[in-house]
Image (cartoon, rainbow, N blue to C red):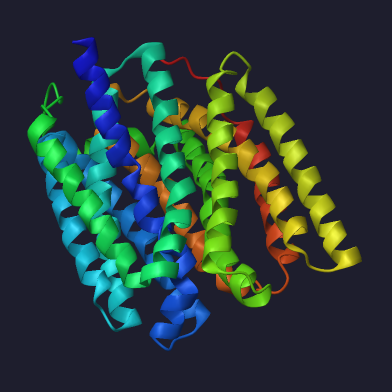
Length: 391
């Protein structure tokens, strides 16, 4: 029983990671997509943001679907649809069509991610669930850490279309594994009647602690995707580095997030508020030093990346704590609760990514000031939450 549960959890971690992989893997190829489709950077960046908007909106519906129809069937349908849409994206000649397909990809992968997270909630309880949530964030972090590097290599050697083809094959393999090895875990299926939908939604969305936690998770997670939206054009066009070089840079920042997840795993005994104050203070100090260096000495890659690494490490440590706190009270509506939380989280990320074109690509200090503002807001919001007991 223990081995089968562990093996199922490993499969779910791999499928959950697709949410970040689908969004992030094309990041190093954005300048090449811009050239191939004869468009501008701001328009091209919507190929990144559209997937996040689809992922955000799709999770709201997906939560009700996986609580009503079970975890397995919606996940398989989502994975098959995702694989097909990835193949379509590989052969589209239009940036507008690509943006639309990317939105569909976000919708499809939402079924996979929401179903996977709800499955983890089905099979683990108490402290075991808290540890499992940390593994969810670690697996997700592994996906967003290595996917830009892999995408950069594929783009450099085979072109941007090959990124979509390769990912389509990977998702197809995951679909087969779920069909063969995944046994349904939902103990009691929830009603999908409109009155029940309203009641469940109110139960979740009228919980002020839940909304605050969701917003905090959105702020914490958004920094890395915002970096990935902004940086390809700064690194490749302004500073003259290659797509592969950017992939390694994204790997460094992704590893910072992953390391934060891992450190959190071994510091669960430290109160949340103490972690928040310490990590936020260090992050703000690092950003201020980075801005001061750029003002005094001009733009360098190191002066931008080093403070970002400190910031992303800190937020990677805090994210799983607030994620588990937000989901813990909703054991009987796990699909809906995690759908709303991640929808709000990714919605926040998508909005921040959509405004990235407003920041000049030759002056990252403005973006760093924006991050300082977000950190100050996060400190205030975190004071309204309390350490939740994971039951």
